[in-house]
Length: 258
Image (cartoon, rainbow, N blue to C red; front, top):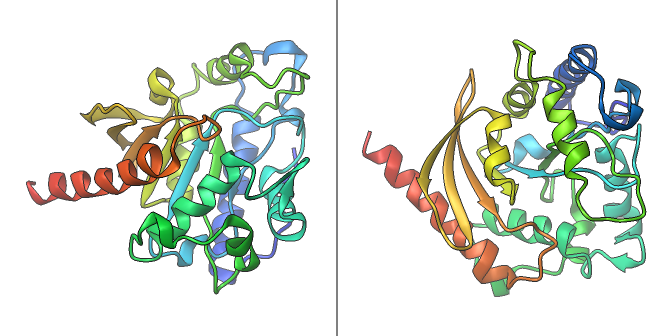
């Protein structure tokens, strides 16, 4: 279990230290054994990239599980792949739908909700990623245990086993991580009924491509939009980007009625 070694601006170093404290507390709070003889040392830590707090729209993406990263730090590793390699495995960043889509969405929401066709390619956006001049975002997986099998289908037994290991904890560490990161919007990847692990979920509206919720934690209420998984072969503009923009409008309308 490795904490991040990235260089953060001073104000974000404070946030990262708080997040590291959450992870240390989390790893020691396990109520029962993890599946498959996993231990807290196997946890894959995640969080946010440098200059996340400087974004106009601070986005937290929530996935399911990491792949082949047991004990690593997700943010450090992906930062290197995004900025130095501009590739994930044998695919360029542009070709990797899961990662490219996070770049496109973050760029659009932080550039005046620009038209989809005006968003640059992911490799171009990556030139200034996690710098004062570029975009940045936060990312967490529901499970902090890595799927290390050769079958890249979601290991729901492992994912659910991680969540259930903390069922008896008086503290919701998923919510505590979210409150530490403090996003403006949370975008989840087809988690559906498992969203309840994050905190108190209330429906705004169900939709075909996206469902809109509020997530209530101890500290704050957030807009949460549950979308198709980002690796799904779906039209990126009509099934992801446009529904997100619509959801932001719905949430603003909801607040204006209070």
